[in-house]
Figure (cartoon, rainbow, N blue to C red):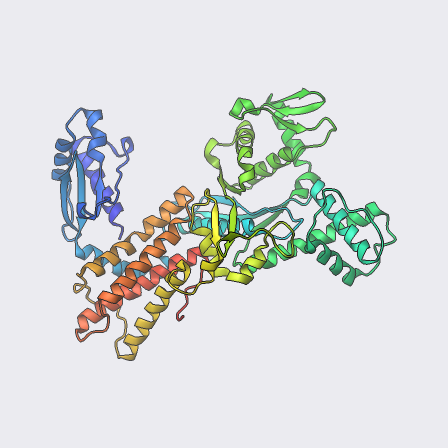
Length: 550
C-alpha cells in the first residue's frame, strides 16, 4: 500500500469536488515535512491554487479538508498548518498494512510499472579497448549498472550497451605499440610510436602473442604485422574487459562495434541526410555542421579537409542507429572531459528530427584513490592509471560497487581505501550488510526457541516509537526507487540503506524480539522479516550481496 499515492488520489478527488482545479491543471505535491512533529506527509496545494483563484490559501485548505473522504483507519489526522499547508499523519494500522504488503510482495516490494515497458538504452563505460579498465571505468560501471537496475525496477525495458571504439587512430597506435614490444621480446628493434600506449600491460599482451603464435609475425612487413597484431591485441584486451566486468557482476546486453558503422557507411548516410536538410556547408575544403542553429556554441567539422570523417560524424551515426533500434530514450554516461561534447550531440540529434528530451547524458566525475591520507598516483602495471582489477583485488566487489554508487555521480569521489578495507561499523557496506546478517540471526534464534515467522500474525502490538519509525522507513522504499530512477540519482539507494540499517540497529537495541508475549514476538518477527526483505531488495539493486552471517 502506498500512502502517498492514496493521499494524492483523495486530494485530486477533492479538487474536482470543490471545483478548484482539474487533475491536468495542477500537480498535487506531497512531501515529508522537515520537522517530524508536523506529520508524515504535507501538501502545499492550497498555496499553489491561491494566486490562480484569488482566494486565501488557508480558506482553500479548509474547503479541501472538508471535501476529503479519508479512511480514518489509515489516516489518523489531517490538519491545516502555517500559511496553508495540509499535514497528514498515518494511523498505526496503515503502517501495519505496509508490513503485510512487504511480506506479501517479497522481492517485488518497491517495484512499480510506470515505465510502461518502454524501451530505453543506457550506454556506459565504453572505454577505448586499447588498455585495461581503470577506476573511473569502475565507477561508471557501478553507476550505469545500478541505474539500469532502477529502470527495470520501475517498469522500463532497459538494455545495457558498451560502445567499442575498434576503428581509427587509437587502434593503429595499439598495433604499433604491441608490434614494437613483440619485436623487442625477440631482440629486434622497431620504433615505439611517439603517442603509443605505455605500461606493462602492452608487454604482457605482446608476450602472450609470442607464446601463442611464436615468431610468425617477424617476417611480415611492419604495416601488415601492426595491422594483424592490433586485431589480436584488441580482442585480447576486450576479453580482459569482459572478464573483469563479469567479476564485477555486470553483464552488457550488447557490445556495439564502431567498425560496423564505418563498414556500412552509416556515417555517410547521416552526412547525406544532414546535407539534404540544409545543415551542412563547405569551408576550407572541410564539411561543417550548423550546430549553432541548435544551441551549440560553434559549428562542428564532420569531414576534415583531408576527406576523413570525424569521430563526431561517426558518433552521430551511432546515436541515430540507437533510435533506429526502437529505443524511445537514450542515456549516456560520459567522463568529465566530455562535458562540452553534450551540446553538439544534442544539436545533431535535433537536426535529425529526434525529440529534444529523448537523449540525456550523465557525467561521471573523477575518482581519487586515497590511502593513508594521500592520493594514490599510479598503477604498478599500467603506468599512469589505476586498474579496476587492482582495486577489486584490494577491496572486493561489494565494497567497490557500494562506494562508487554512494555519492552523486556528478561530484568527484574520494575513494578511501583504509575505510573500504575496514570491517567495523564505520564502513557503510559492513554496517548495512551486518544489519542483514543480524536479522538472519534473530530469525534463526526465534526458530531455535520454537517460534516460527507467521505472515498472518496480528500486528496490533507494534506501537512503540522504534517500531513505527522503522516501518516508516520501510514504507519510503518504493518512492526512493522511483525518485532515484526519475532523477538518475543512484546514490539515493545507498543513502536509504544506511538510514534503514541505523533504524534497525536502534530497534534491535530497544525492542527485544523473542519475548514471553507470543503476540508481540510474532508481530516483531514480522517486522524483522519485512526489514530483511527490503534490505535484500535494496542491496540487489546495487549488485551487492546480502550475507546471512558475518
